Length: 494
Image 1 (spheres, helix red, strand yellow):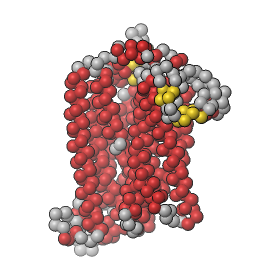
Image 2 (tube, rainbow, N blue to C red; image 1 turned 30 degrees about the horizontal axis):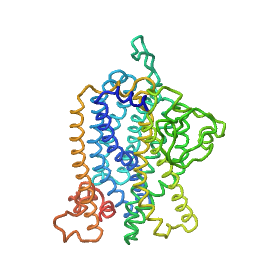
Image 3 (cartoon, rainbow, N blue to C red; image 1 turned 90 degrees about the horizontal axis):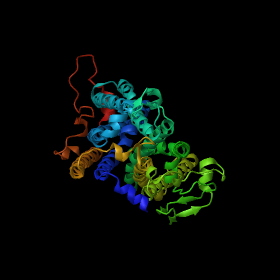
Image 4 (cartoon, rainbow, N blue to C red; image 1 turned 120 degrees about the vertical axis):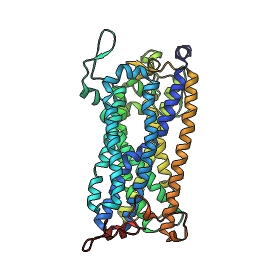
């Protein structure tokens, strides 16, 4: 207890507001990341189906999803830019000393960001101007640009967890930087693939959940069936894959970051035959309150046998490990993530069983209720994944090389609290604008589907919006087809 109080007493006063500001902006931005990374892939999957099968319903879905993708990207520009500034403003100690080592990851992410912006613009523009297959193939690099952006961010984060690719001079400054080693750290592979599949899985369940709600409300048409089936199938296939990747990532943490693993599993003393606690709270004296204790399971999960030795938090000094509160937060985040992943496997098996037996969707309303909830649950797990990664690494901002307190800005705490209030107010406005635009689009789409656009002069027909073909093609020269093609107009208009 005294050691924890001493640690807290030695932290600079601006550390708490800096952490809160970074946590709020990161937690807000991370909710948009699944759609930035995975929605282009799901949209192109639907687009390909539409062209290959000459399916106007699939084409309509792809076109509408592309509009949501563009709006989400615009919002992500705001939240992502704020995060970029905060890295330099809030943590100048880290960026000043270590930026030359791991900064290439942020450079890759920036290039990917601009490339993705150009490709999204071409994709939206192409609905009105390009031939169908030309339009599709020009958009194929879009998911790859999204993956490249994820590559840059995860490269930087994995380096912070397992820093390498440099030597230290007499003053403790990094020299002799090896960029390849700094990017491909021991945690890069486990983190990257776990992150990418999580984004695909989350976007799939969220998009499918929208149509699951429509299905529960009685909209049983092919539009809702197809809008549910394609993204949910992607998510269902990836769910067991993600469970194995998550297990592999946790085991990588066990080997490469043993103190973080001890925090994730609230292991106090180094020992073998270590039990697994599902939830529960770590106290400052090492005791655990509450939770479900499963004997020997933690050692078995870590090394496949009960005699596996698991490093405990007390193997290092109190100043070099997470506090009891931080360990409990990381532990709960990790357990929530694992629990949701396990439940989603059951949901995916339910879906797969019904599809293999009847070639049809499950008929139970409970299945669609669970599918509607799955999207929100996945967003929670995304938050929990980053909480586990960041809180479990405490007190280090660069693992075993620089503490968070050494990297924080010298700006007064009051200014940082004021900045947090301003950022929160701006984000509320931005989120409100995002929801307002999405709801307006939903209303317009529903009007178009019901054939009521002519009676609602306040809203233009869907075909007159930038992402759709024109309602009246421009006059064409004799002997040539109208620009965009008649098949394009009939297939894309509602």
